[in-house]
Image (cartoon, rainbow, N blue to C red; front, top):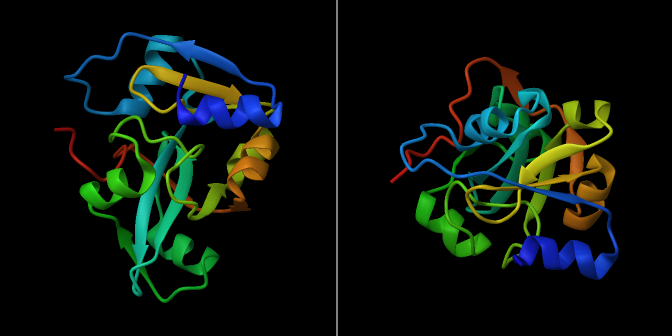
Amino acid sequence: MTPATKILDKAGIEYRLHRYEHDPAAQSYGTEAADKLGLNPERVFKTLLACSETGELLVAVVPVTGTLDLKSLASAASTKKTSMAEPGAAQRSTGYLLGGISPLGQKKRLRSFIDSSAEQWPTVYVSGGRRGLEIELCPRRLAEQTGAQFRPLARPGKAAETGYTPS
């Protein structure tokens, strides 16, 4: 179906797909998914790309209920500082469109980090690789398939979703 689901199928990882009708006017892709699917938004995670001072792209998976703390990501990645990646660079590197970037099945394998809050849930929801498609899976399996480390990355607060503006 998508590169994300193909990776999980190939690895024999248990997951569930959840579909919803995406509204192009939605301001926040992740909170839209939580609302339309009737999910606890603390269990729905967004995939963000950041850039280190050396130009390395990094993947951060954080709850839609908060925002990415760029200093925490820099610390987790052992870099001096990070900033949000340019939308075009994020799309080229992952092969996914904004609002549908999955941490799974990206074109390039990037260093990845998952907010440690994911570990408290038996399953979490991440983008399935397109707008309107969420994958529910065990956070440990997500980390295994992405090579991610669990680290505190999110600041609580109003979700700014991606740091990008939907086009």
